[in-house]
Image 1: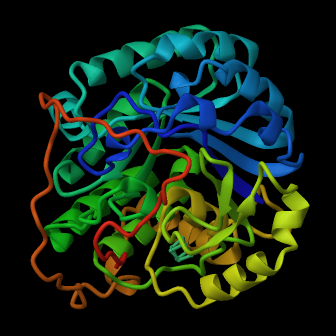
Image 2 (image 1 turned 180 degrees about the vertical axis):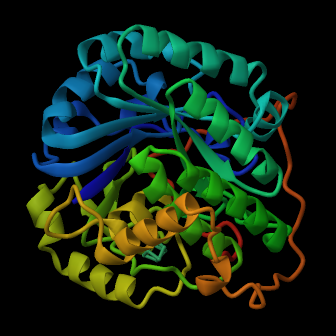
Length: 376
Ligand code: SF4
């Protein structure tokens, strides 16, 4: 099973696609070490994220506790405080660390509302590499404002030996907003096509499978159905800062239990968990997020290997490119069937804005639907 733990909703970025930073958690209610101890050993892939996980003063202790429980432990950070990860990388050089970068400097800083953020992240990544980090990389949320810079950022990552992960703009209950919808689906998808080609050209096997993942993103961006069945609630779980456990981070009605008050087994053997699995099997959201898509691509029996579909796609298209051909995207994607949104509002940017932050109380209803949303 894969899991994602949101350690905090405090954040020092001001992203345009996620308003968590406007709705922080209070330190005293954030998921404790005692609760995290209940996460069982044998997790395939465990992602520690936020908000911004480096704002947790006990992050090093959390890593000490969870590192042995997972085959792969990732910290997803905005990279503004890379120095806080230095002791962790010295102790665990193989830990996976990803910094969020949304394109070239000006674009990334604008989208993420970070003054000098890009520069800090790059300096931080190079420093972590110097300290011995072996699995460092960049994560990019592909959207209209940065899609044309994806190939350049990918090349930059390659040049420095960094990994390059992508997701696409989507809505989810924790974002406190519901307008994460592409403005121009066809143009964004075309840019993704270039990235897919570029990923298959090189000799990094991980990038070949990322190419497949991006094919799924391309299909999602165009509003077509997901390429593999969603495995949320069965092979993927999401723990929020109040220790609530959900099948995914999109639908707030998929809550299975609370890890502070229940054990992991009690949650997954509960009636609520059964109901959730049913809901997931009939879910009509068209999600293709790194967490759930990667889980869906994995062979259920041999977790280090992919399923047959993605494997054959990779072999076939890598060979085509090696032989001087091109990917025939039309074979996989129906470009004449692009979902037409009703009017999409312009998203706001907050780089130089002062915005009042409202701490979410424990007694609050944390995830109302912030306007109707649906992921196409
Ligand atoms: S498809 Fe449904 S269950 Fe799966 S991640 Fe999306 S909203 Fe959640």
